Structure formats: C-alpha cells, structure tokens
Image 1 (cartoon, rainbow, N blue to C red):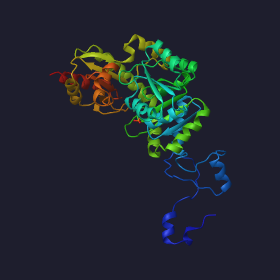
Image 2: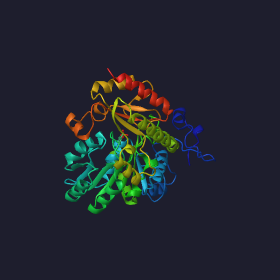
Image 3: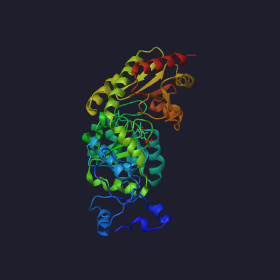
Image 4: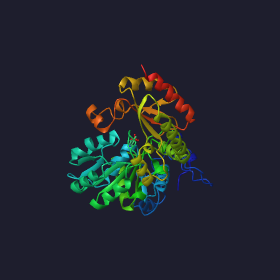
Length: 403
Ligand SMILES: *Cc1c(COP(=O)(O)O)cnc(C)c1O
C-alpha cells in the first residue's frame, strides 16, 4: 500500500505529489503522450510476468511505450504485417531491418543503385566495414537483377517503391520472386509511396520500412521510422535492435505521426492529383527538357499498374531545365515564392530541392551522371495547396531561371 503523502515531509511531497493516483473512469478517445519512462506494479509476480513477455504491460520505455505502441499498431495494420517496431528515424529503421536479416561477414546485400543517398552510405560505411558485401543493380534491367541474385546469393535485397529523385517504380513483385528463389530477405523502403499507394508485404516483401518523417507524419514537425515485418518470427530481432542499439522513437514524435496518419488518405489523394496536374502542365513547357513522373513513361505505367494499389504516379515530380547549368537551377530555386526550398518531402506544403547539391552531394559528378542526376535536375514534392497556385509559382520561377 502506498503511504499517504500528508504523513510525509515537504521535500518528499514535492517528489510524489499528484502521481500514481489510479486511472479515473472513462477511456481517453485518443492516445495520450505517455512521457513516463518507467512503470510500477504492486505485485512482483506481475512485473516478472511482464518482463518475461507472458503478460501485456510496460516496464521501461526503451522496451515499449503505450504512445509508441499505438503508432506501431496503426502502421502494422496499414501495411498488413504481423507486427511493427518504431525507431527514432527512418535511417534507424533501415539499420534495424538490415540487422534483422542476420548479416554476417561475407553476406551480400543486393541493393537498388537508385537508393536514397544516405541509405547507400549506411551500407557502405556502417555494414561494409564488418565484411558485408554491397552490390548495386539497376532494377529496370531485369536480366541483370536475376543474374546478380543467382550469382551472389544475397542475404538481403533492398529496394525503394518509388526511387529518388528520378521516380522509377520498383517491380516489387519481380524482386519478391527473385528473393524467394535465392533465399534472400526482401526489404522495401515504402517512404515515397506510403501504404496508401503500395502494400509491399502483399507483394511478397519480408520487411517494409518507412521514414515516418515524410508522408506518414506529413507536417514537417516529427522525425521517426517504422519497420513492419510480414512474419511474427522477425519481431524479436526488430525489438532487440531498439533495446540494444537504443534508437527509441520519442513519444512526442510518435504522437505527432499518429495524428498525421489520420489524414494520410486525404493528403495522398490531393498530393497525387496535384502532382499529376503539375507533371502534365510542365511536360510541354518550353524551358523544360524533361519531366520525370511515372505515368509519363510506358514502362513505368505498366509497373505502377502491377505494384501500386491505384494507378497513380505518386506525389512527386522531377524536372530538368533546358538550360543545363547549375546556375539556372539555382535561379529557379531562388525565384520560388510559394513553394518552399526544403530538404524533405511529403509535407502538406510544396517542397522543392536540388538533388545535386543536397541529397546527392556526397557523390562525385561522374557517379551522379551515371545515375542520371544532372545539375539541372529539380525535385518537387507537390503539396496539397490549390494546384493553380503551385503551377503559377513554378511557371514564374521558370521564367526567372532564364538569364
Ligand atoms: C528521408 C528518407 C529516409 C531517411 O529517413 P529519416 O527519417 O530522415 O532518417 C530513408 N529513405 C527514404 C526513401 C527517405 O526519403
């Protein structure tokens, strides 16, 4: 029994006042932000059972937290998985998914050459020094993908549903077939598509990874990551990474992301519709050399029809200016008056970035050229504003990009 506070001294009262007063009646209609790092039990037998995983409960927030668990359950449901585990960022989530593949010295990770730049750095600077071999493939060359997989027998295959910044759609169904045949685990970074557009576990992936910082949160105010596993058996490893490596998602971020998720469908519908309008409008613009948008390319349309839940090109559009100089791209960026120059995507506002000097700046110009990322390439994460305002701003900035 807890000792009544009025029997205790002022100093002691300060520490304990107001706490552990028991749960009132009525259940909160939305999940509160549980900032408590520890949980107490009257019965030692009970806490022992919770520690052992025999009873549901919480003991310490790095092992589990009700606010974070609410987010995990939501993303698990949307991705149709057996379970989910949240992390402090998308990168921490990718790191965990890779560790859950039981890599060891000599293991091979077969990865898309078009991966997010920092993901390539993760492979090359964190995993490679431990003897893990990294092989990159162009996923649009199917024969090469099969050949590389049969030849290298990878432990893991790592791809993104929609690539950055050229917005190629990954043939996830084919990757799953390849993974099955060679006994690899397939990890799909579904950040750009979200479960609104694609559910990779249904297509045969083993793990889905999200940078929840982007569309899931959607308001440029929370950083986090989630891994969803198709098989129950993988959850222990995913939980183990949080417990031991410690990339715990903050409860404040978990709350913000959970709140964002409620409007994911509404936002995605508008992002995708606006992106389609922007792509169609800019495709014939005299100052633009090329628009990258999946539905404008026959091959990509076919893949999209197979792997996406609705025939959509997603919420991003990339453009290459006719004037191929970096200066013209900078003039365009600086002339934007509504669209925000920002290094992220998936926010409610239209965000524009210059890959050559941001996401892909660590690469040599030769590497960038090989991937098709020119100095005049600009990536637009189309927001949910009125699309006529977005197009007007892009068009006035295009005019100003000319000398
Ligand atoms: C942003 C991003 C990441 C990294 O996520 P953080 O939350 O910034 O750590 C990983 N993959 C993709 C595709 C991303 O866009």
